[in-house]
Length: 80
Image 1 (cartoon, rainbow, N blue to C red):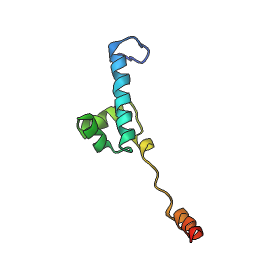
Image 2: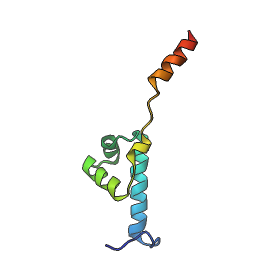
Image 3: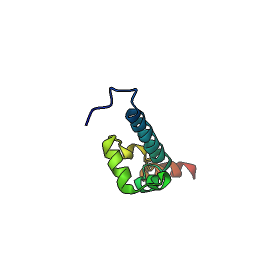
Image 4: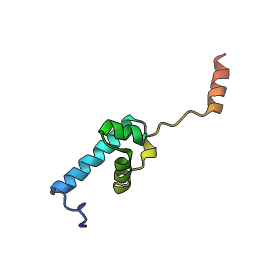
């Protein structure tokens, strides 16, 4: 298959860019949850997974980090 990244004026290229945007936007809204992102986009988890691999998207970057419990405990001690 032809590498379309250098052909910015083709329909295929623009569709790829838009599809990547839609997937990353859905992942951002669902905090990196692929199955929920698939629901938002009206497709299957399998399709989302294949597109994530195709576009080399790191879905983990959209997950919110949980606060460190040790840090919470120390902060809570100061609030007493």
